[in-house]
Image: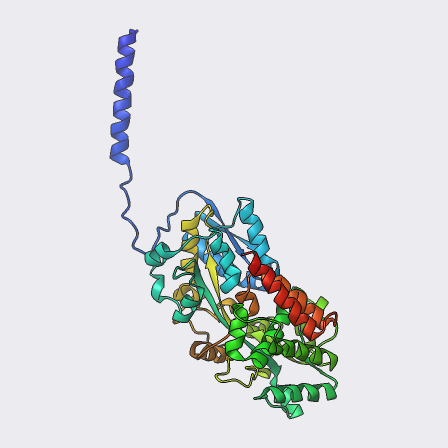
Length: 438
């Protein structure tokens, strides 16, 4: 038998041998991956929470992209958390709640402008400069989109879409009626009157959540106030209780009173506004470049449709346009993997390999849709990338607190609870109240 000293020596010898064997068979350290590349062998298993507003059809299309990412990075499982259909009226609050609870997603979809700004001001999102350098994102996206999403010269998001909006119409129906796209505001109203005479509504919209109605009111503001004053109103550099705002509210009431807008639209979901349009009961919808995908998803013949920029009687002719982006919360559990996923889904190679509807309006340079397959998206892309000037939707110019006041007045104007003069006065009051709290 061994004495205590002998046992101690034997144990020490065994430990030494074990360490030597481990050193001989250990895997050598891997070289660091070049900028923009990551190892596909993976590490610990993680779940990457991806917040977005992609609808059910879009989720089905995105699944192939997600599957490809997960195949390349098998240790990462992507979990989509969608708040589809509500737009900017609900989705930002969902994000704020998750962040306040200490359980934010790892990355999330966001619009630009004032909708994103509160997250930046509150320190709830990461400044992404280091990731731009790591992945070489500086030259990857349309320059104007990158500039539009900057805040104080810094980048807190990665461009996703470059989008514009206009009036969509069924050109086959219009050819039968002998109608042509108007070039002045007066011609636009004359066209609405002709549609009414034919037993049609001029415009279909869904007023639930407010932002779909806002698009038409934004158009009236651009026409009546003009580009310079419209921009100053959005920056609260001019009072809202002035004549051009009153005239804009009056135009909205006129369109409703004349039966040019589908009835009872304030309770209709924006997604449902397409049904009167597809049925030929309404002549127009004010929608964006993404609407070609909507037509396809609803089994409409794209060749029957076209769009035009709403005439404002101002030069240059501005239209509503905005960027969309991906952001990473400051409290994200997996920020590096989130950046890796963003780099993957915004790469021209991936977007070309998977030509899903969401990539037809990509902000990534060099990604163009097949113009035989996406003729209207190609037409939009030329307009958007060559535009001299655009104006943002009000919900990207105003913070949410101001937008609540904007929607309050807008709906009251439509419902005739306020006169145009009273609406302008109340909007100015809401602006002053917000300014007083700053």
